[in-house]
View 1 (cartoon, rainbow, N blue to C red):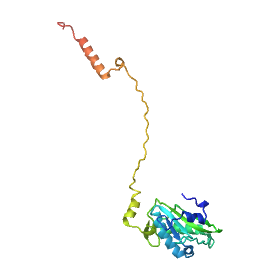
View 2 (cartoon, rainbow, N blue to C red; view 1 turned 45 degrees about the horizontal axis):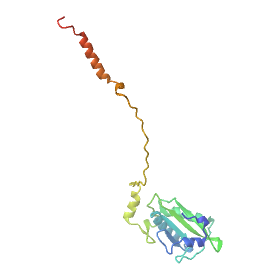
View 3 (tube, one colour; view 1 turned 90 degrees about the vertical axis):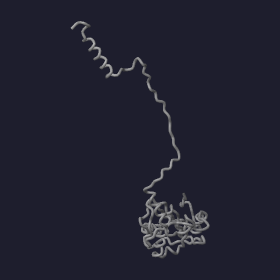
View 4 (cartoon, one colour; view 1 turned 120 degrees about the vertical axis):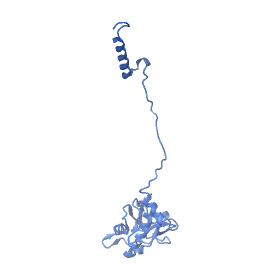
Length: 210
């Protein structure tokens, strides 16, 4: 878990990998000035990361890892709000579990770069809305997702795998009272039969008397 509230651009650079990988994508600040290009790129990257367990898009970091301060506003909207709206509109189904982090530039804290954090989505797979394509992240690139990858994402909702890491149990003593043999209660049915037989014998007259 990265605490972006304690980072400036220098701290961010220390966290970044040497090159783009399966968790990080770098984007120049210039792309934020072209809404059409930004929407198409967001659809591709958001789909890829949401369909691959999550990741980060750093706006204002060039491919050569140079810091490029971003615009702070787009019209009357802050850049964070502007990006948030476009992210929600970029894919189908819309993703909900994401964050926009403003990271101040170390040399001038009135300027900043932005990091879009995308978390693993339980609603995956997500399709890029403009291109109508599903993407995934592999080898540091966002590529069209193969059929088997999409099936794996869909099946995780219907074919859960139960993993048991630990089983705990306890044994409690159970006291069973011992009933002496002579105190056992006779079977009512048997007693009734014996009693009827005894009564019958008493009613039989002595031998020779009729």
